[in-house]
Image (cartoon, rainbow, N blue to C red; front, side):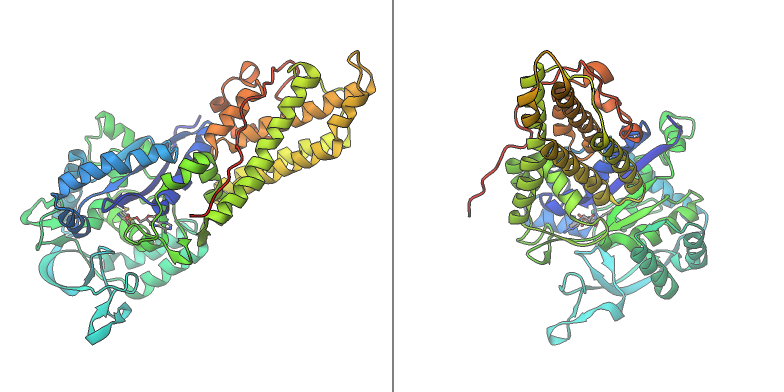
Length: 533
Ligand code: ME8
């Protein structure tokens, strides 16, 4: 185990309503990566949480007749934390921007920049979109009826803000940022996101207003009690404050920060790419703190062709899907069927079709058949491979290739490619079993031995050992069924827990040995009928 930590984060989500499959998409992706890195024996830390300050949350609280603190306390406890269990997220920490420790550390960060002369006071005048919580560039606005200017993302009128507040001289960091992107070509991924960021920095970098004076739901500006910090410059700091930034370097938290920072990967949606790839590294440069290693912007989840969001009627809560299909199928579907980095559509019909063909009839049926045959023909005791030939070598090679491809894809954050490589290997095992027809070989196999019995033993050993590899490689994506498969193979008695298997070695053939006790348990993916309406 190396000393460095794979530290992965999701955005912290605005607590304005219940979670949707949109925010859960990023959380599941981060979770699969975290579980994969843990499965390789790496130190791993996975952070998610909630963004609770600013006008957007304040207005949602007002609309619900509650104070922002009561409103966020309730939604976090009743919705945002429980959804993590629903989608089976294995986060190590959960940060709320209202946590006193975060508040104190954010104030320390900005006080330091203020003391160093990196904050100035000025007059701000310009358009602001509350739904984006973002100052807008006038030339990007759309024209609405009666000359009203609209946010290009939300198509809603922007506010015209004119305030005296504090600024961070972002434009000063233009050359430093461009040099940083040049020296770190994989800092922004995918390539299209990198290009967008570089062209934005080249053309449109303005200083950033970092405080607001017309409302008070935010972190107080430490040197001016009349103002609160702009929600984004409070929120971005969560990645550092949760890791111990701002703590005494000799304290426990301070020591943690030294090993955990810089973060390995911030996963974000494209909507918030500029904040993460431009403002955030510039803030850290100003404070003399290393920028994160990578920002990956994924695409939109579309429902009925439209981007789904918490505020729209098309928002689907993860429970609606998980209650029927289970969390493993949920995770498998979204991680495999959408090219990570591109937009993708969700539909119930597609999910049901994928579930039925790939999980119920595919992997689930394969496991049921193999374990049932080992029970029927060998009393549940895995036999020796006695007559391996070309077909078996092909399966062994295919496992090695699947493991190598999947591990490599994870390093490139091509999550769908990793899951597909394992799924394709499941199809290879299924094809192997279908072609070898062990049920026919069994008819000629005498209990006392002989060529047919050796052949039957070989086929069932090969399929079982192949499934051992599947259990390890699918564990990050489908943790619950991978454990059931591990149990069905009787692997723990020989190899230890599934969690202790190293994903890097999952492709090495021959780990499950003769003598393992296989059981035919309940179906991993029972067939599901969906009815209209
Ligand atoms: O932006 N498809 O919070 P937010 C894919 N608080 N991803 C989606 C999605 C969809 N339809 N809908 C939401 C914020 N997401 C800030 C972040 S971080 C320091 C502060 C995901 O609640 C995606 O990751 O609006 C997107 O970037 C994020 O939720 C926006 O969440």
